[in-house]
Amino acid sequence: MTDQLKPETLALRTGIHRSQFNEHSEAIYLTSSFVFDSAAQAAARFSGEESGNIYSRFTNPTVTAMEERLAALEGAETCVATASGMSAILACVMGLLSAGDHIIASQSLFGATVNLFNTILKKFNIETTFVPATDIHSWEDAIRPNTRMFFLETPSNPLTEISDIAALAQISRKAGAFLVVDNCFCTPILQKPLELGADIVIHSATKYLDGQGRVLGGAILGNRDLMMEGGVYGFLRTAGPTLSAFNAWIILKGLETLKVRVEAHSKNALHIAQWLESHPNVNRVFYPGLLSHPQFELAGRQQISGGGIVTFEVKGGRDAAWRVIDETRLVSITANLGDAKTTLTHPATTTHGRINQEARDAAGISDGLLRIAVGLEAVEDIQSDLSRGLDKSH
Image (cartoon, rainbow, N blue to C red; front, side, top):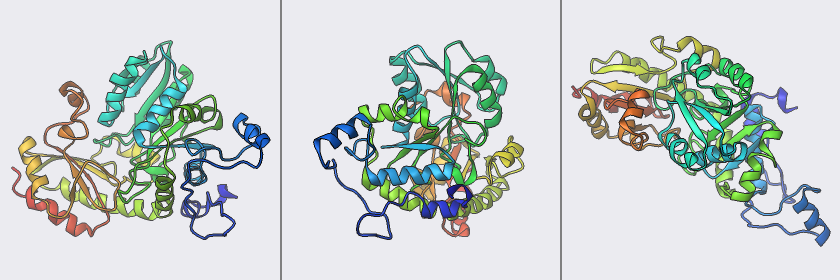
């Protein structure tokens, strides 16, 4: 039945497991462990002969509900939830790769992801080659006999570059590698990477899936063979980067309004992007919904709309960019995104501040660059707040 339902219905009606009290809103199961009827049942649960809850590090009804709902939205066979977006990436890599394996990754990634690949994974002899997100030939040229994973964000953070998922799926499949797509910016409302050929979808559920800036969470989605005992779930069960039941419940409720929120974010973002593009103190605007975006046509094929993230370069470099930030009175100066409230950040000194200058230059992150995650306030109020500093930034 679920494959016939629309996203807004799936977000409200999947993953519901009512208790004996027959509650309407899903319950939170705040318990560390679960009781068995007998020694035989305990043994059967631990061996996997019988399904059921054991210990909340790897089995919890509230977490399961959230996993089922997100899997339905992404069109995935299964989902493994984690404590954060970064732990989702770590669990994906550690669950599926081994020492000596090679990753090809977009050079346009969140700064913490770059650091994870460059420092932590390198300690375990997993090497990463970074290539331009939009240059298909660079991905092909980087393939080695030991390449086991392609990793990308599309749209990328922060420049909203769009990678051709279908084309990369063909290349990765021929190379015998997994294609992993971080779908954080679009969510399954605007983009379905699995339908385009990706093997795995990654989320920082902290962002749009929660939508209120309340809790941390992450998720990895794909087919059952990749996710379960032999792969990602096996790593989670043993290593324990676990999503708490409370956080899962918050995200579960956030998913109920995901479609209406994402559509509203996108509408406001397009308005702000068009206004910024005409502003005399802005060098360039990066937004997939603008005709000026280098991958506008590809975005139109892959995405339903441009999403809620707008990045723009202010004339005058860092001083001018910081002036725009400091003159705001309404928007929130924070590096998070996906909240109902508009957020504004300077990527070169925050989200990408821990990567070196060479890597920032390669990713196109200049000192004058600002990233705004457009919220649900009246768009006129957001524009007015940005104007305060932008009108005198140069």
